[in-house]
Length: 295
Image (cartoon, rainbow, N blue to C red; front, side, top):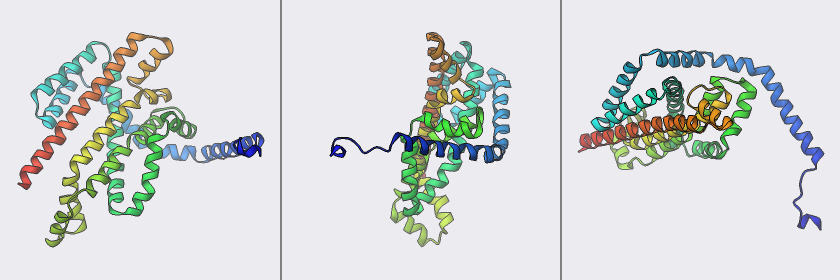
């Protein structure tokens, strides 16, 4: 009757045998296909290195000017533009400019990748309940799995470097844009869709001209959350060789450098606030513009 009080566990020997079998199979897969898979990411690695060098090589005053122009075009807010300029100047003044540019490059590439991959998946989920039933549990696992766990198979397969870090960040950050794209399209008023069909719109025209514009507030919220999650992953990704603000934070943890960690953590917060405020302001402005068009 011991099974009533003790959980019926697999024996230690059988458990060890199972783990060895699975570990051996994954190692064999890594040796067999690791280099081939790594070569597929070579163009992305080349672009990432080029983009990072471009941001670092650009004079600081020109880089701040470009970011201020982007901020103003997106938000049309003088206060926000001035705030972004002051924040970026302080980041550079305190000696964190290069690390900030490295972080900006990886976050930009990860966000673009998440958008390019996530929006089509979200559209497919909105189109098919079967696709949604398959993808939703995968997204649940991606969002609840501890971030460190992503690093283990990726590092075993691709080693240490920028690409493993980028993959880990994208896996961690992509679920919000997928979920909210799906939600946004499903929330589009059925009467509007019927009207589009009545005017003879093709499925493609209906998607581009009706569904996506009306779902844009939700999609922008998903992109905003994706950026925030990518920034949150920066410190963890620094453990496998991703340059940027995460590495000084990691160094401050291991060596108890309080000020170093505080300053670089503050720079990450500055980037997060800039991305958050600019994307939210753009989303609100686009929504107002769309509302004016419909009225």
